[in-house]
Every structure is written in C-alpha cells, then in structure tokens.
Length: 248
Image (cartoon, rainbow, N blue to C red):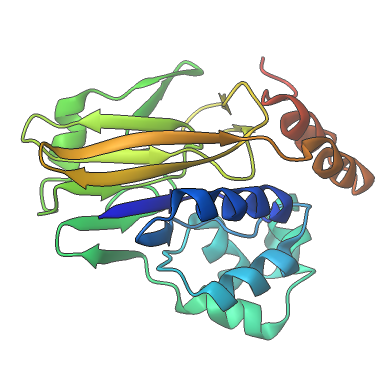
C-alpha cells in the first residue's frame, strides 16, 4: 500500500494544486489529509470546494475546529480570513470531520497528538528553541495506538520517528504554510526553510514502512502577493522564503 499524506494546507490552493499534479505521477493507493485545511488569508473557499469534492479521508485540525466553534470576532486573523470566505456548507463539512481516524487496520491518523489537536507530538519547545521530543515520551503518549504507522501533522515540519516498539510516526510537513510563529507553549517559530509545497509518501514494503518527502515548486510569489494584498506581511514573507518574518 502506498499512502500520500497531506497536512496543513491552510487554504493555499495553489500549493495544493501542485501536490495534486504530482500525485498523478506518484499514483498512490490512497490520499489522506491530516487537517488545518483552510485557515489563512489565501483561497479558503476554493480549497474547501476541492477537498469536499475529493472526499479524501480527513481529520480535523485545531484551526478547523476554531472556524467551526468560535464566533468570528473571537478568531485569530488567519481563521477569521478563512471564515469570511466560507458558506454554511463548508462549515458543516468542517464540523463533521473526526478528531482521529483509521484508514487501515494498521494505520492511525490525527492532526497533532492522540488527545490534543493543539500540541506537538514529536517536537518540544524549550526557551523558544524547537527540539525533537525524546522518543520514549512519544512512545508513552501513543501507547494506546495499536497501529504500525501513526500519521500526524500540526508542526509543519517533515519528520519520521521510529519508536522502540517498532511503530513509526510520520509527519509529512505542510502543504501550504512553510513557516509561522506561535506563543504556545512558549514563543517560538517553525520553519521549513524553503517555500516549497510539501507532502509525504508512506509505503508498506516487505521490511515495513518506508517514507519519502516531496518538496514541490509552485508560484509561491503569487501566493505571497495575495497574502500581502490582504495585509498579512508575515504570511507573505513565510510563503516566499520558508522562514518566519520575525524569528526572534
């Protein structure tokens, strides 16, 4: 089985289109989406319409939840920008997405961690520095998941972590937002350090799961210009460079 794993599209329909074009050459058996599909100042409506039509197995991300649950004046700027483009049918679709899912008896998927959609699984933040989380802590947190492959996103950073018990955790990176800053659990930045659209491939072979990361060119300058035209210099910088605007 070959699974194409997408995560954190964040309304970047142009980046998603590049991924879909690449999928025509990869020809996976299955495509899955790990959530945070729409939030951002780009093309939320087009992205939602496309994803609803494709009907890939999809879980909800924290920003998907915010768009559904929060009043628009309580949302952050990126969620508010996306929510302003959406119709009720789009919100209904977001509201139906599950927190987690199984796409195979041996493959589990969720957005961030098994119990929390707004916390990193394989990264930890200490004094503003992002490090890999100790593997024994990741194994303990995922102990209840009887699947050889665990799919997660949220950090926007491509990762593979082999657990001591033989299970694998796979994060494909972000399709549509290569860098951002956040204040939780403490101020930090996540940076792919290039502006490419990213996704991953997990393939079951005789020795177990093997993984590959795809980094695709698309017109990220056009996406950055759209973000800038909507007053989001932070997004424009991230989209065009792969680095956060204010890394300090």
